[in-house]
Image 1 (spheres, rainbow, N blue to C red):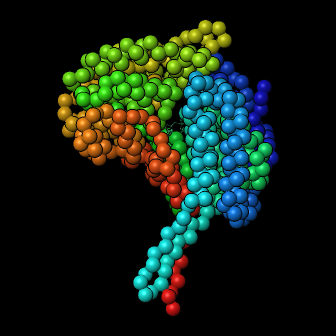
Image 2 (image 1 turned 180 degrees about the vertical axis):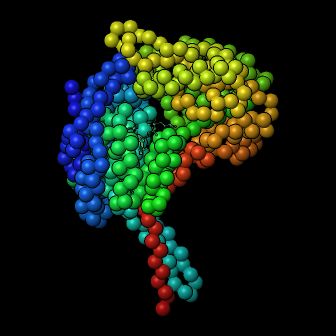
Length: 481
Ligand code: NDP
């Protein structure tokens, strides 16, 4: 059975404890590899390595850093298919999705920040007759990156790439549920000639490895993506040490469909925005609001199409949905379907597990589920489910739908469907969220600010926002004389 290793100081190491955890293939419900059950002792080694590597890495000319990073991206691209299969085996997602979304985006993340750093300029502020201020943007030092299981390599590289490009050395922890492509990335980094200690990837549990990263005073900044309660735990520990924090947290995103929308486009995109990656994308729209005049027509067409979506093993090229990431997560999602029924909801389609045959009989499959008839403020409509479950609700006025859309503690993303330009601007302006798509979903330009408001997070990733996060500004004033 394959045994993943930590990547510390350029070496592939067993955990100091010698303990390993099981890594489960969710499409079969079977253990298929072992991962290090690392502890603070491994983080200590990684921090020492990163501190030693920092002076040379941060002083390396930008174009040399950039070239090494581009090489890393090229090597992943050359192994695209292998990475996609590994991601899908680890996570349960269809291979086609990993091939079209996860791995290409990981490559783009690295290339984007490897080249963004070449165009990153600092500000200057001239004071007439007095002098000039200029701002230096220095890397922070040793930083921590902690990422979740839903888009494993995609979100891992989204943090690591700007951190490295800006000249920091990184201690990174992928989710222990999906560690495989992070391990493969460490192999690629070694092959690309990334200097030892610049990137250290330590595997293990959040409460051990994640916690040790959060508590280590030598790690000066933490970029975290994950659940809101984990984000709160990290913030509580890190705040008294005045660490810089970027927190990308949960969501309960509204998808608002007005009667004047392009019906076909709204319908087909809503199927994706509801169920892509088994609904396990923080940007998925899980609360669908449809304007009354088209409510029944939209609902019926949506239910009909979704009930035909094929739930299958990840290697099936026709699979629209694969397995959920783990058994506990499947149980959590099922418990929300039970709650929705208790709260008076009607399951229009889905609602139950799918049991495949043969070797996939133990996999964690769930039918895509649409629920109707719930109050906007019930728990099902307020709490993050993070699975293939959406609710559908009619509305009569713009004011009413904005009130319902803005009623949750979250504020990550929103989607609006309308052909009325003024309304599009108005609604986009009024929605409490960090990202709004009008007549589209998940169109991403890596230069744009990415993140949420309210309990969906603190700070922004993407473009120069990420480079600003991973650098400290220092203002220098020079008198004119
Ligand atoms: P978790 O918060 O459980 O875990 C995220 C990461 O934090 C994992 O690597 C986890 O390790 C680690 N971790 C867990 N406990 C601690 C701790 N005490 N200290 C430090 N690190 C810890 O989230 P999930 O992995 O379950 O991911 C799903 C969540 O992520 C959803 O809420 C989703 O909305 C959110 N998300 C947000 C995005 C955004 O951009 N806003 C994007 C994607 C997802 P381990 O796996 O070992 O527990």
